[in-house]
Image (tube, rainbow, N blue to C red):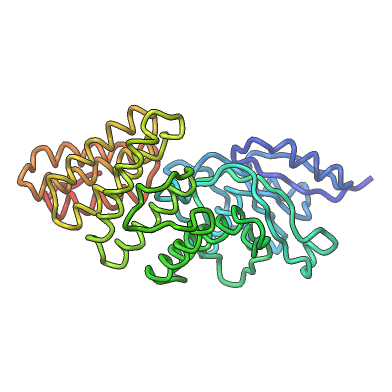
Length: 355
């Protein structure tokens, strides 16, 4: 008996066998193959389509699993899941970007909304709970692709937490794709935090108690003011926010990520304001907090900011050592954006070539 066959290409994901089982439960024969299998070998199965699995790597990481580009010329349907989806975008002209702070990294369940008018989702419910676990995201889809599902939709007007999440997510994505100006971002973020803290005021941040999500929104407001070129205002926000976090978050489990991130962003803004000694001190405190709480994603950025501040303070030897540390940490954690920033600054400020 001749089977219709779907091949699952394994890029190191956790759920490869589950994917294959689901395909077989749909009465379609399926096999899992390593992504390194030559295309000529795969075609011997006469597949009707491919599924690219998820995986722990970034498409930009050195040695990350790839695929023969000829697979995209076969005219066969390909379903990409997580890393697999990012790999398709990477090969076909889209843009995959690494999350640059904790507000962009996502882990856990979320509600996803589908375009049920399309053939793929026809007959399904308009929404479903899905699972997210990723640090990279697709900033731009390849030309000719359509978005058929999204995790953002107008929330139930009575569900303030869901509304707040939707607004915060909209701003995050809008900042990445240029959809909103910094001032528009600030307006949306103020709407978001006032859903749960109605009397919130940027002039008296310490007057209220906040959840971790609300701290994240205030952090985003500071970033937006900085993006707008209002670094003095951003510094005032981070001054208050840091005092609050030191008082309420420093010795709690939720400190993981909060204190290092606020210290980094405050140091960055002080650097932009020309307050280099203060910026260097906070960046140093930030890297110490990263080590204390095991939050190593922010560590190379704290090192980079401290290195830049030290250069403008005239401490080029210290600056050089800090740039080296930041560079090698960026390589270890595969933080490509950070690598490029560190290489550019080290060359510009110290005539130092990092490779």
